[in-house]
Image (cartoon, rainbow, N blue to C red; front, side, top):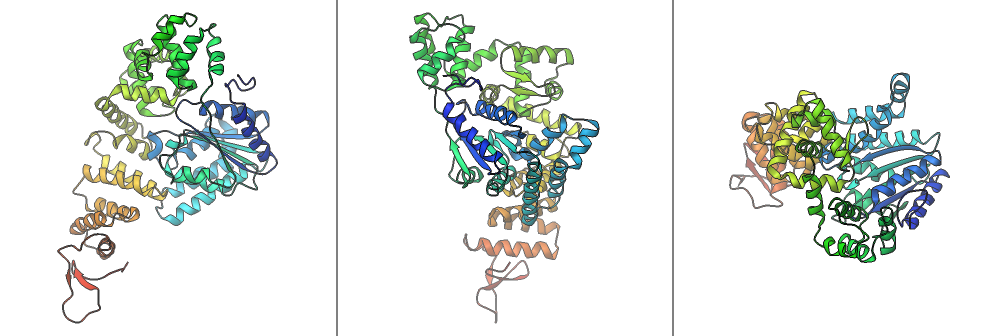
Length: 502
């Protein structure tokens, strides 16, 4: 059954629970709703319906969409929320927004990027929480995050932080995500918040799918049954299958069409859809997929080498084929599954080449280091002469945001780009200590000590060695201290060593 006020199929129970959460937030009792389900099940449509319901109730609204590429960018989802709320305004209105809570949020994120300490992370989370409090002071606030499974770690930590302090605030936090791969991490924590409830959209029934297909023509029941079986009741995949039948000239009201449905898998449908597009459109789709959510059309055109006229024609072709939509300044895929299909169609070599071109174009445009680094991490070594410096800068911001693991990956790649920089190895060693990889940290710090023989570095090396020996067998370079001494001491690198010393 189609819900009249939302345009979504067979989602009355889910929308009822979301409406209750909004009503609760309007009374000053904050709620968290986690919409969880596999790709194409209808999470995005529920998020859109939630925003419509909140707008009708007079809520302020912040929104963001997670992205696989941006998952390595510190505070990417939070920045997206704030910048979206500001970017559509100019002049005095924009200045007023930047002088208020939105500006406070951006300043907090800028300050966090300069200090990699865990204490600064805690201060940033608390500052962002106060921004949310200020934004909800005059009217209830809805915060939505779609595709949260691709959110960066620091932003996901903020969502958890907010969820635990939302009970007495007029805020509704609605997060759409695929099921977490593990029962740990921020998204798993978010689902068990005391103010949270999980909404699990179900596959469409045969009756609902009949309603979906009847919009085009009265379908034969055999065709409905075949589409339902092939899609598993997944609304997005069902629409894609019907689009493909239409493109192939197979009528829905002819029972014999049912036999053809079983030969169409989702990947076949996507390849067929791309195969009908002009070559320039396919290239533009690939560039947009690599650039990520809400890509700049001019950057995508530069990566593919399309001039403005060809870019316009290609973008129009993609829109007509229901692959991309344009919101004026950005290219947006109609669904994450479409983007994933485009990336899969590219293949690893083509993807790597596009990431390299993206890194070069973004660096030339003075894009933020974390955005350039996200592409460098997937591009060939030597893509940029200044690659090590860009990766290093992005890693500092990630450490400040509490994402030591991604920072370590960036620094590892930076060392690959410039293996003779001892200071870079020292930073990698310190980052490895944050991730608990003491043995690797010891090796990097020892290598760095050759070029940077300062007391602090040697001390950190000794500390890493002490931690490592609790986990691995002692290094042959260590020997018990000769002569009188405390039990458990020794010498390494010219320094006295004691188990457990930090």
